[in-house]
Amino acid sequence: MNYKNALNHTIFKVISEAAKDLNLDAYVIGGFVRDFLLDRGSHKDIDIVAIGSGIELAKAVSRKLPDQPKVQIFKTYGTAMLPFEDLEIEFVGARKESYNENSRNPVVENGTLEDDQNRRDFTINALALSLKESTFGDLLDPFNGVKDLEDKIIRTPLNPDITYSDDPLRMMRAIRFATQLDFEIEKQSLNAISKNNERIKIITNERIVVELNKILESKTPSKGFLLLEQTGLLKHFLPELTALKGIDEIEGQKHKDNFYHTLEVVDNISEHTDNVWLRWAALLHDIGKAPTKKFSKKVGWTFHTHEFEGSKMVYHLFKRLKMPLNDKMKYVQKLVFLSSRPIVLAQDEVTDSAVRRLVFDAGDYVDDLMTLCAADITTKNPKKFEKYHNNFKIVRDKIIEVEERDHVRNFQPPITGEDIIKTFNLKPSREIGQIKETIKEAILEGDIPNEYEAAYELMLETGKKLGLKIHEKR
Ligand code: CTP
Image (cartoon, rainbow, N blue to C red; front, side, top):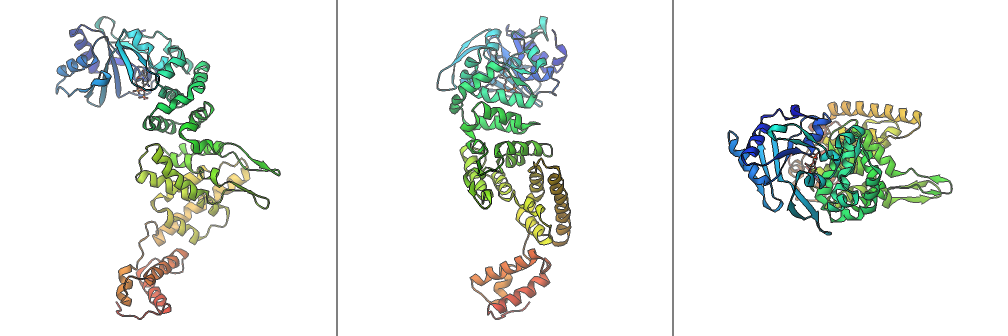
């Protein structure tokens, strides 16, 4: 088969000519070819394999380009990267490769195109298009990768035990591609992942998180998490999630399986948001349930304070996985911490003051919190489902109403500590905090409007009750 039409971009002609000048063959390989055949939109990372030096080819290509972009050379790996327009072109010499047991660092030898295809992760990623003038666009597909694309199958070119042991991250990649593309992992391969799951321990957390994020960003993330769990991989990096598995029963009382529930929530939320951090919040919203689970004869199963425990666990989990400990982490923590609030609200009558408190506590995250909580409704009872969603609609409407009237989203008290100090001529003291708290409470309860006048009056009144003398009126 010939796929010249995949190579319309001028860069391929330039690479072809440069390769001819150097008297070597070059091929486009990997994700670019795969995604072209899948019609997945253009792939901005282009992998070129040279039968010879990839670095020399990259330099020769750069010399032929208008601005001669700088080639970045990675000597240890024998690769080079050339940026061109919005593309990143990666050059590598074809190699035969084997890895030693306990590290990812390969022992590399020069090889043929076939050698190079052999050492790639999946048949669908080993497809190559020729850049040689006489065969420009010809497909080289020694492992029937095209058939696997059609049949939607993830398969390794070699015995999967070898492919996965060469680079154990590929076990995660198999699951990631299966999730992203909605493919199935071929049985032998799946068995090999289960058998070798321990080997994931030699992979850095940063690389694992890259794959986890790609799974979470997919249309139906549960597919990936189920596979990660079934193959035994998940427990190595997210034991907090596997701890949610299982249903306990005492005296006929059961709780739901919080692992499967969590995956349902993640799928639900993925229909409403592409924000990967909100998806993380959905994934982690119940992790506090494992350590807080208790049974009492009177009330059955409880998970008291699981939101608080869960939010603390988010920090440790992010830290362990070397994820950013910045505002993204705080965002996930806060959503986990508040994740039960709107549901509790929606089960009872929705009062203004409860909504005002919610908006005050959630601040700018209130809309995302509502999205999370709506996704959390996984009840199979249609009556309850409808009731909760109707109540949520009331909560959402009230949020808008309360917001317009009371502006509590990023609440700044109308009376500052300074105002209180001046009025009563105070040194820093407990009374200042008490007065501030009283004003805040009164506003959130709806006893006074969120305005200076009313807050000022309440300050004077509260000061008087505390036995303070007015020193300076405004
Ligand atoms: N590859 C591999 N083993 C790995 C990583 C990559 O064999 N652990 C090979 C595959 O042939 C892959 C190519 O290197 O197609 C490029 O890898 P990468 O850029 O990570 O992935 P893509 O396949 O391009 O896909 P995506 O951009 O979706 O990650």
